[in-house]
Length: 239
Ligand SMILES: [Mn+2]
Image (cartoon, rainbow, N blue to C red; front, side, top):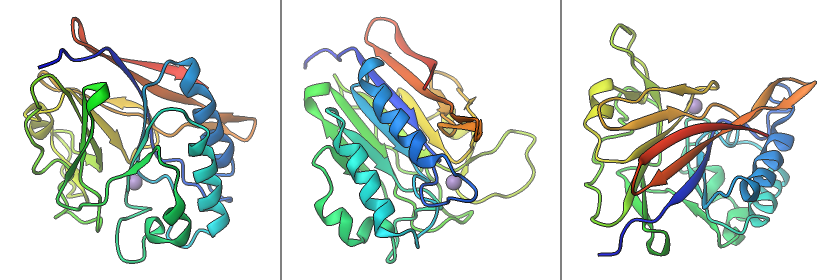
């Protein structure tokens, strides 16, 4: 078995393209993320859900997204979220995605699938959300890591703190994180960056790349270093 490689993942989520009222800087933020990937040394860009705001966004919004992704020289991997579900009327089944760039990889299986990049010694696992309910469990069925490969899981859902009594949709529980088989858990759904690591599993919400205001349209992305000697480390980069 080959040794795992040193890799750098750029992790973002919750861009909400197509919502010009609520997220007026989403196009600018996506462009800033794509611009930043080479300079940060990113080997893969992770897009962890709610990339589009709703299922009715225009084809021009979808084309604009695909144009940005095609500027990357590395793979981009997208997990649908609750605003951009993978269901019958999904944006991901619309015509523009019939000619998506080759470097864009989509999770489409509600029961979970692994997208493998052998040349990077990297396996990415996730469940494409078909509906946003308490019954949808984003981490259920995660496989074991393969020898010699990194296993990074992507999940879009609500992290339940121990004292959180509300039953939320697409829940993610602390013991599920602690017992997860992955080396890194890339989360989406929350607009702010929060680390929720447990046990040996490093887990974090990247938060949105959008900045706090029209005057500050872009914010930050998460940078995940996967190092076979020192393990997983997490940092933040301003766009
Ligand atoms: Mn969400």
